[in-house]
Length: 370
Image 1 (cartoon, helix red, strand yellow):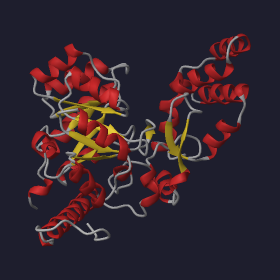
Image 2: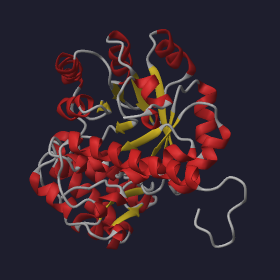
Image 3: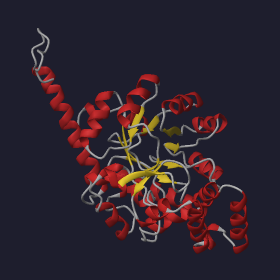
Image 4: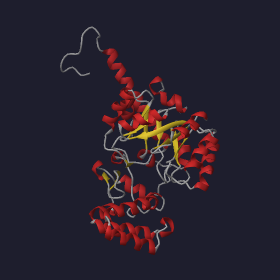
């Protein structure tokens, strides 16, 4: 490999290739991070869905298998064990942390003192500017093509906007699964790519076979669409029976589905008969659609668990980027990473060769290929 793939990302994160595996809930476990790290990429543990009493063990498992702490931890400040995530990242001197709704300046200062890099994910230019102001070391932009909670700006617009506005290295996510995509980001001035769906659809992914089969059957990007039916926010996922049912229901119908779902998994959601009755009475006086979103948002971890852990894809939600439609087989993490790196280098080598072959004494004529 030559210097095309030596970028500010590989320099900062200490990985061989400028390819990041994102922290997908119930998917980015120690085994996936280990496979990513050993293949030369950079992986993030999904701290938001790893049980608090298991998180330190998962971190140690990666350290033991890879011989160091050259990986990251993702968390949200609103999760119950956010303080634990911060403390463990600092204790083990992990290379980086990633987050959406991020920590305050004081917490970021703690990370910096421990030399833990801060890599927030943003979906809009204003959020990128705020993240830099708070002390981000690198930024991941996620275009609207990306899976899960996502913004409405595509990567092709968001990446150049942010590159022109910030001085820190920028990683592009949302719509990437190939070496051509990586080459385009590097050519634009980006530091690398981050992928979720492509790593979810690998042989090392812990996602159950029945759920992976659902992902592999997607052959049209329009099947991976945005819905606001779950919690009122933009959420890109694969269309399935549960989402269609939720979207087609009226205000009270959605509330009934939300309450029924919470009651079905009452042990995990804490829903009691009295709580259910109180929510329904409130709905008669207030806005049933708003209340259904509140209940469904609380259900969301369980809905994700149903598909990503229990292997019941039609009973839960299937967050996914649109690139699922372009992925037809399950490869190993090594095959994915090395294949992307090789293709990217070939693209960039060819671009350089074309530029060197063109005579420099006259400009390209109209109609001449660039």
